[in-house]
Length: 221
Ligand code: GRF
Image (cartoon, rainbow, N blue to C red; front, side, top):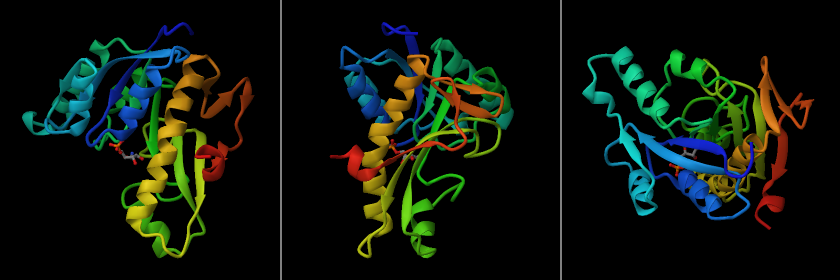
């Protein structure tokens, strides 16, 4: 895929700073994808404001509007599918995605998780990293599979934790790196450079035994 033929739908629950990084990327003539829509489960998500500002169509699927989990899953799947996307981006989407939607977009759905997976799946990753006295921390872009924060990793951004770091400073440092590597991974997808084969990420035809790792210094120089 090239020439902006790759259609991307973004799912976000919160501030949407990663979504903004995608929006900014699409301003470049060289960007190989377009954003066709934003789906949120939170009617007050700031990500929705960002979409409106850039005339990106939105759909809100509030979790509490549905009688049960499977009704929500079905509504979410409909909302995502309606945007007719080639690639689904989970940019801080704080709900578990139903198996049917995951299967529909198998190999075409990317998530970013604020830790060096397989470390620290789940929540409070920055604090857990500090509590364990880790020297390294970072963030991971991976293909989405049925397991939470699992699936083949594609690219990680890594930083050195300093004695002054708090969960809040780590969050800021990690997010600055996320804004680089997440649109980058989507670009690789749109250019046909990455794909999921079986349970493995393949970049430029080479199965990745481990993700590409970029350091904070090289990303933010
Ligand atoms: C990011 O830090 C991402 O790693 C996690 O959720 C956060 C979303 O932040 N999955 P934002 O809404 O993109 O600012």
